[in-house]
Length: 328
Image 1: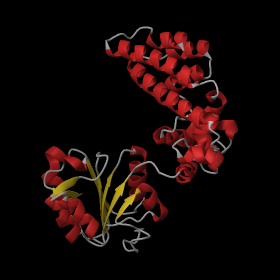
Image 2 (image 1 turned 180 degrees about the vertical axis):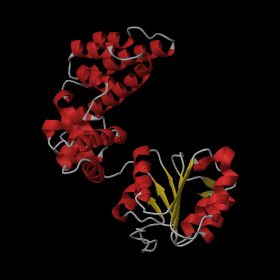
Image 3 (image 1 turned 90 degrees about the vertical axis):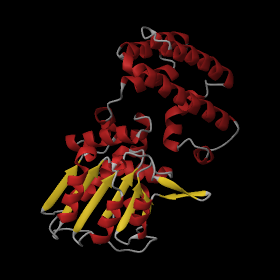
């Protein structure tokens, strides 16, 4: 049976941590509550717990109808090694039971609560907000930990994370993956997993095989590169459900081009631009086209997008993206 130690100093294994902090040592404490907007990182935490070799394992998904049974199972399991994974933890009603679990859980048992909330629940306490009681109980226990799965704030940490998903990859290849997946961690993870399962060497030569770009991303990238014909071809492959997301993706890409153009024109170097919010992997990706996106052109493109978004909201679907390609 392999169980990680539940102890550790607060500065090494904090009881309240971001994924990046937790990922340094990956402590598997007895009671863990996970939340956050990056589902792929939540998945990584869960998979680390599932590596535990324990005789008793259970997972609970329908916490609304089966909550009493769930609590009974967790609180009455044998005192040997066990792991319980509770999905949809934000929907639990009898949250006082969390405190009971924290106080009574056996040494070799682990309970992982997975919440779909973007952050930890808080309650009013005078003029400030504090952690909800069930989360506070976990935080205050040396056997508990709270992990918020958000995108790493430092570019280097994010690239190291992506590189870890493709065996043998370095930071440069990770940057290429991020650029080719639009900076979306979930898409980057899928690409790296594809590479790993296919046994692809960690090399730029295999990026096209690993990264299956969506038509939305291809449409936007062809468009900003001035390849209207290719963009129109990609637009014809997009279904109605993808139009809204494609317009949003293109709007974000246009913002990055505008900012990069202005900052580079002012003499800022790559490091200074990165501090302003455009990571270096994205700079490399948009630099070849940014020079042609002056403030005046961005205004014109914004008008095109505004018309397209208005048409989309009014129910028009046919030809929306093709019109954007023609007018860009």
